Amino acid sequence: MEKSKSPYLKENDRLSKVIAAIQVMGKYKYYQLNFEKWAYRITGKKNQEKIWEKIFKEHPEFFRVSAKEKRASLAWRRTYPKRYNVDTEQKISHAEFKSLTDEQKKRISREILTNEDIRTLINTAIDLHASALKKSQDERWWIHLALPFAGAILGAFISQIPAIQSIFS
Image (cartoon, rainbow, N blue to C red; front, side):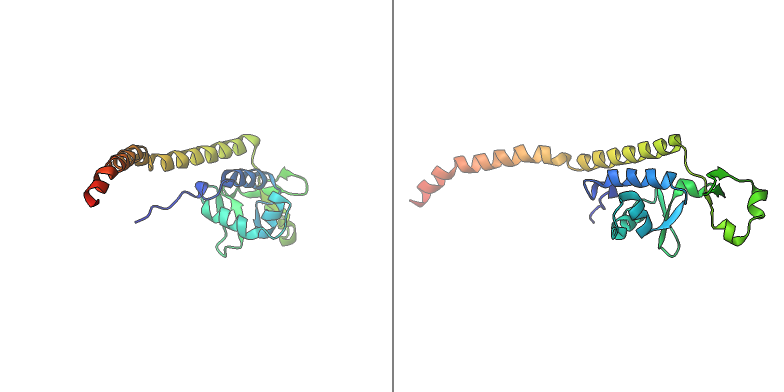
């Protein structure tokens, strides 16, 4: 049975993409958007929603994908109640939230993360990447032993070629 490869090692730039997503999703006024809008927010490019959908789904340690799998959010932000007014960029009380109309509630999101929160998430991503890299290297320990052994066998075989040729001549 083949072991699955860590998502951090699937692409050379995977860690940088995870870090970029953490930064943008941690600070953007709305905590949840569809894949296309997150792709544009993170990269400034359109038509990359499939790339970012894959990243969000392969990294549940940071991201949550909605039940209908069309929207993504940063897991940490989902722990906060919807009390952040995106227009005033201020927290509101529970009583203020309850007094809002349904239309006004659309302008309320979850609180943005602090710089320290984002730093914690980025350090966690770096640690997970380093751990996956180390595990990948540890799984190849036998190569360092096998190469000299294979070289010795090949060398012994090559040294015997003249003896083998004399038998057939």
